[in-house]
Amino acid sequence: MLDLNAIKNFLHVGCGPMTKMQIKGFDSAQWHEIRFDIDESVKPDIIGTLADMKAVPNHSMDALYSSHNIEHLFPHEVVPALREFHRVLKDDGFVVLTCPDLQSVCEAVARGNLIEPLYQSPAGPISPIDILYGHRGFIANGNVYMAHKCGFTYPVLQGVFFEAGFVNVFGGVRPEQFDLWAIAFKTEHSEEHIRTLAESFLP
Image (tube, rainbow, N blue to C red; front, side, top):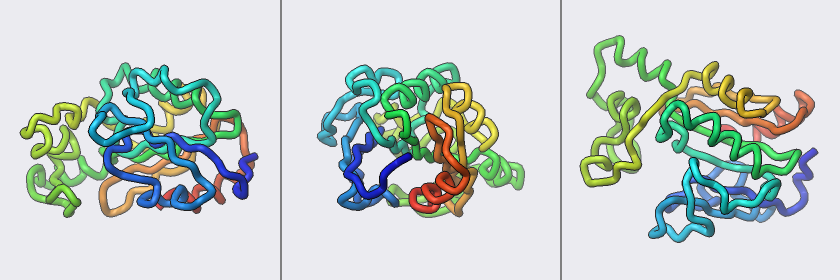
């Protein structure tokens, strides 16, 4: 079981300019951040992609944090990427992952709202079309990595974690920003332990 009093390593996948101080649960001296990104300009500790994580050693991380990365993969790449998450984690490790919630986005589209903003982000207004296909402004400026190639509802997200070898998945939170959140565990843990960590790391 995870010792919350010991210093632990977490892999910040697709870190961009974000640091651990902006991430709930990891923003303390108990966590050592190892930053992983495809973009050399953000100065990651390790350069790579979700489809190519071979630079990260086996069983080397106590946790992994991934925010809005998995939707940039093609559907057939999702389970192999999550198997890589599984590979780099220690046996008692876990993943905290967030991505768009297509159920709530599609509910907005079904009400006739495709291009009207749903909320304001640091990058500007976000509309359902941006959540479905990727942020239009970033893509128009040449950042093709921001295109979305797949999407998830919570049951689908839970299913791909199980297919990748994770044994417990907890989450399904849908805050105002139309996001899914999940915490997934490599090995069995008690319900009490799972809920304690979920309270610490999920919004």
